[in-house]
Amino acid sequence: MRISISLLGVLMSLLTFCRAAPVDVLAAAIDSVFSFVSTNDPGCAVMVIKDGQAVLRKGYGVSDLRTLRRIGPETNFRLASLTKQFTAMAIMLLVHDGKLRYEDRLTDVFPDFPAYGKAITIRQLLNHTSGLVDFEDIMAKHQGMADDKIPQIKDAGVLDLLKQQSSAKFTPGSSWAYSNSGYVVLAMVVEKRSAMSFGEFLHQRIFVPLKMTRTIAYEKGKNKVIDRAYGYTQTANVWKETDQSSTSATLGDGGVYTSLDDLEKWDSALSQHSLLSSKEMEAALTPPAAAGGAPLKQVDGSLAPRYGFGWFLDPYLGHRRYAHYGETVGFRNAIQRFPDDLLTVIVLSNRAEVDAPALAQKVAELYFPKK
Image (tube, rainbow, N blue to C red; front, side):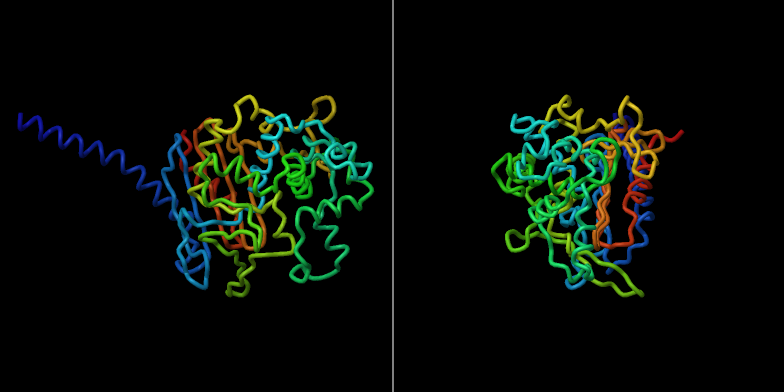
């Protein structure tokens, strides 16, 4: 009996080692990917979710150069365009409630919108085929000032600018062009049809149900970001805080702050269809097509990326993928979801030179089955 127990102990130790070694090797490989981050510099937070479990949550560098607070799973980053998946979900929840239809026109929601809005549908706003003029371009043209001198614009202000235009950039539905304007307008659609502020709708219908207790649509003077990461840009080896710009106050296109801890809950909700059924989610994961079902093109004639509602749908190395990136002054972020591999990789960064999608892809490749 003693021999059997001893052998069992050895076998259990070997089994534990064999299971632990790959995890250690993967962790070391991920550390190598982020080795460019110095200890007291702005940095990155990375999370890997495999088979429904967070197998790695780690921070590199600091969230604030004034305090040197370490980046961790609780650190809240400005998501920039990763926000669009929450805006899209808000619209889809309104459709679920029967308060909105994907084929509703802009003029159905905003009767005072100019005539060109009669041809623009909610669906086209969601998948970037509306042709709305970029509000950033309108601001630059009208202001004629350096970006840091231009007053911050909010979602309602963007809607007002678009109401002053007489046409879209192209016939809605005929082409594809990434549009922050479209997602800012979608936030205003949420407010109009829900009779709530956009931030409150996100809070009540998404963040509270999913227990994303530290995630907010940030509005200066109205709420506060806990454990906030500040954005930075390095020039001549000196870090400069570049946390806000003239377009940093819009919410629908990029105003949500969240952390790895809360994004784990978001990823779980998407996998388990906690907010909407798999059938309802199909619309978000179906790219638009040109007339006759042909692949859609961009204005310059190049093939458009496959884009649903808040998600790029192009595969990576033969692996089906739902992904998005987020870029704004001082922040670079990426989420890469590989549903067939039961794998999600998220990279959040508060330094402007980072290529977050490339970093996320490097990490994902470590978890792909070896040929």
